[in-house]
Image (cartoon, rainbow, N blue to C red; front, side, top):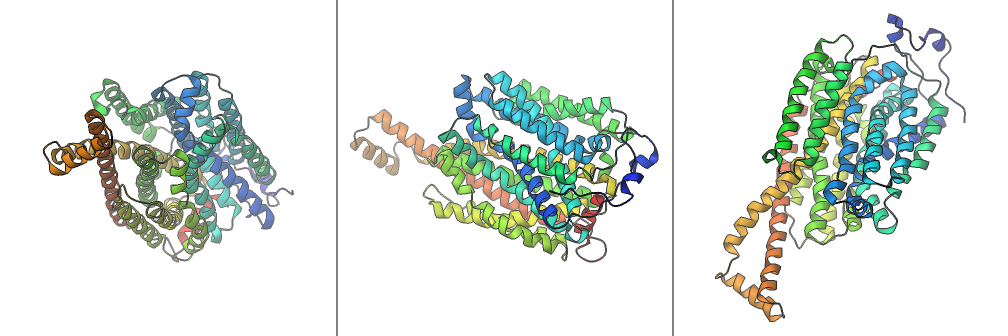
Length: 542
């Protein structure tokens, strides 16, 4: 495979790593990739992103299996998820600073290869403590992969095809969280849990090798930057405390727990000091001045809120199906799998439309589709068959295709070339954090409202009521003792209560997406013709 070389004279003008002159900050420009190189590069970058995003959700359904095999409780086993999320959330916003220090290509390749190594170590872990340690390392090295894959993908395409580049990138980013539970459930049911980590090894090695062959001659400019130790320390403290609070809040009964109260206070205090420090630091570890850009702020916040609501639904639907509808992990994953069909088919079309239409129109259509999907789910009941469950999931794929790409184009539009990696890292950090918030809020609301619905139902379904007495007599007539019959009726009431609670969350999610339609129109229209936003999003790559 031939490698793509920089244009003549580019390397001569490029600064050497370690220089601290003003010229060292000047972005290098390379022509877009052509033909087979562009296809191969896109596949390699997409594979790395898919592997990374898949790992955020694939372990979720395997926690009971991992806990049992390692001889620990399920609550202890959830640290396998928490440890990865905390480390990943800390390093994602560092992408911009790390890129300036080491270069896009070097950092991406190092992150990918270290991710492969830590995945292999996770699979070999003999104890929970070792697995948590390697998951922390895995999450830390995974942080820069997603933002840098986005930047390198944009660099591979001409500016007028930036929408298509974002579409290919977004397709893997959105389908992977849905495929994770399905693949994780299937591996846990048919193989052993270490294979949820071992599958990363061949994919990551191949992606890294192809990326090195294609992008090694397209390194970005680097400069020697001082390490913002105070900012980095504050980031670790407030993000770590926040992520642990979100992951453990439901288990510890939220603010009734002194642990959660302490984590919330620590996170808030460190966050306030972090804001003040980073806004006054000459070389901040996170470029918070990006929020001065109106489109970045509106785009990043809208994308984060939308992803949080979407991801909350992704977690809640299979959880409800497994807990109350009798579905196995594999079959619950199959119900969510069709979401990828329309997403894969329509994402290339959306990529082309972003180049010719106002992206705010596309986002509006996507949010209305999501609102429709959640509204359809709010009408489900315990008698819902597979068809009733899969139709909204299938329709949701159209919304997935049409909201991520245009919002990313809005977020990155108008930014200076050298700020694209930092902007992508900060935007992805907000998205991942919102996903953690969405998961915690959705599952907590689900359980809290289930308690409320249970209380309301037992006011009606109690001894002395004709329907209750008739059901109780019917169960006893089938050979159940009075205690067994009452326990059976209580389980039926629980199922109805949790179903009603899930429908409440779905209905609320529908309303949030309707409200987000107004929010996206606060962004400025792209400069020039309607599709300029996508081209501007690619400016940092050329």
